[in-house]
Figure 1 (cartoon, rainbow, N blue to C red):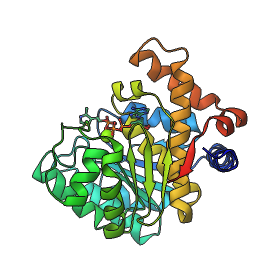
Figure 2 (cartoon, rainbow, N blue to C red):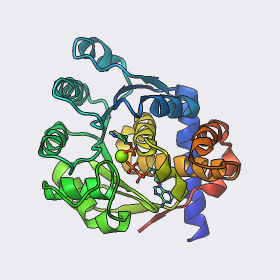
Figure 3 (spheres, protein in one colour):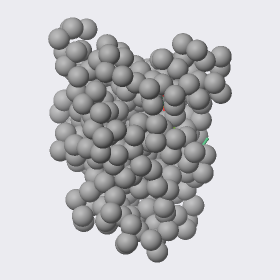
Length: 274
Ligand SMILES: Nc1ncnc2c1ncn2[C@@H]1O[C@H](COP(=O)(O)OP(=O)(O)O)[C@@H](O)[C@H]1O
Ligand SMILES: Cc1ncsc1CCOP(=O)(O)O
Ligand SMILES: [Mg+2]
């Protein structure tokens, strides 16, 4: 990895994290029951302000106030979908960034269709694991294992490019390497530790962090998305130094994210153009 490029990305990621801390963007999260706690705590420890408000009766008042919207279909049910669609429509109309996590997109017809309908409402960023991104790019069931991926992130790079081109969104595929693309350029972030997969909702939490970073700089969604993924990964690496397993890593990851300083971010972030 070229040292100058690595340091430049590290400095960029630090600027985003510092701005999240100083501006504390308000993030509306319509997310699944499993992830609510980790997602809110991740946003708080990064310096953002999470609000888990999902009623369609509130979105007309609340969505105009937020800096970004985060939608996650993890525990999707019939009555939540219209709430997601309404909030996404409002965000798009108001030119506010919104970010989609298509959890288990290939697991059922209902879920796949819901995700594709949400994507037609123009998310700024879509972040999923490899199986989810492949299912969306093909608009069909892919071999998937519920919320977990049965592919490596490298298997989904072409699917991510194709989804970015068809949707107009920046697309991120997470995994051992996190890839981010606008359909044209691709950047890779090589941070994180495998044990992050053993904590439920780390994917959901990092997608919320992407929303906070994109709230700071919506017109550079590739940079903001790659930075959020790398910063979360660095927090995981530092957390792993003292963790004894997934449960303590969860705690230590949040602590590390809260405590990250400039040196840790600039020296730790491993982002490169692919
Ligand atoms: N093998 C790995 N090595 C390092 N980090 C990983 C690995 N797998 C996943 N991660 C990290 O864990 C987080 C969740 O990603 P992932 O498990 O792919 O999402 P999901 O939980 O939605 O399936 C991301 O920050 C990602 O970078
Ligand atoms: C286990 C589970 N079931 C429905 S949503 C969810 C959480 C998924 O979280 P992540 O995609 O971050 O692993
Ligand atoms: Mg997920």
